[in-house]
Image 1 (cartoon, rainbow, N blue to C red):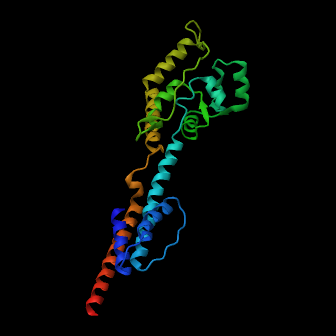
Image 2 (tube, rainbow, N blue to C red):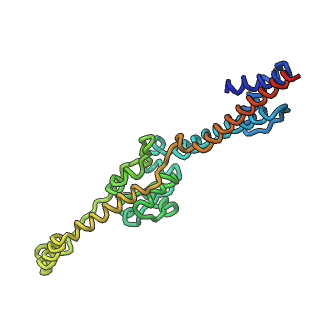
Image 3 (cartoon, one colour):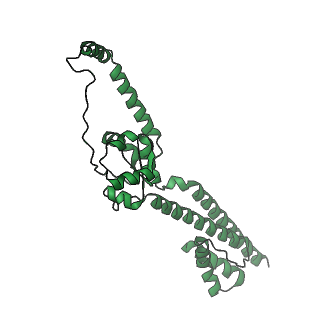
Length: 265
């Protein structure tokens, strides 16, 4: 910006033969108006001055783009790490609660919680619930701990090393799993023998392999949050550099033409 100011003042001195306070204040005024996206009027005496103004506008546009992109990212990156620490905090914030009916049925609830679930419950499944919680940030998810642990990499901010979800402990009811065929049941030998055949045939291992492959593919194709970097604004910077070079060439050409006219006269 110092180069721009000096160049502008030299052009004014070349055309008018003097430097005024208006000339010195014009460049900061153009910068402030450009950053605040406000219009301003200025009388320009040459093409070089017009190119300088265009150059300033390009610069302010790029800076505005960087600021707004970063500010938008910070707004979207806000979460409830500090303000929500238990179920009561979820209720006080008015967040939706997403889960399957099975998972919601094994959570210890109070009458207040039951009434809240009737009005704010959203039925969703698996990673869909976590997607809404991580990116829309208007819902808490009730899900199994294993699902959350297996998807940690999918919901981590790779640039800031911050996890987009917050894991809160929940109190579940005691569940008793009863075998369909107890060892003394007449069908137990047949069931046990067929189950061993399924395991020996590798069906269970094949299903697990398919799930792991799907999980890895899903993780690679997942659209994670990204912060602003230089490659995101490469095109505006190239245009800015082209404008600067053109204005410099025209400025040198005008100085040379004025110098030759003085010599000829």
